[in-house]
Length: 198
Image (cartoon, rainbow, N blue to C red; front, side, top):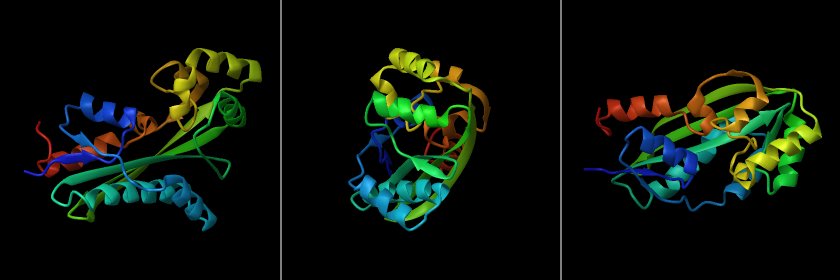
């Protein structure tokens, strides 16, 4: 029977599937994600399409070596004022990013793609819009001091499932999409194709 493989070592995505009682394995996708992302952005790819393409490349990379198994690729892209953001390298970068996002509404696009026998058989991209409270740099530094360097794993430099939820005045969209994967549509697909048990 085919196995289910997540082409990601993301803690958030692994945790979501585990908590949903999905049996799966993980395998890191062997792609130059930053190089691919830079090339796509140079060619004017939208934030939504960027998330979808990166998820597709991850799934394809792992599927080529596991053609008899189902492979999930997933990615997330943050866009604010027509600018696409990457993860911060350090807390100083995180502070600068949060200063740019504070008081504004930004979008998170989370994509998932499923491959089987080296071909995509399902894909989904979801968008969530999040509005941050206005904040001063001292506010941001105080938040980062409590959040610590774990926050660097989040493209928006916040963990919505933790203290980060206090940064927002409004959130419109699905909770799991904020965490980094459109989980409900993915589970519906897996269930429909008997890839998971009830």
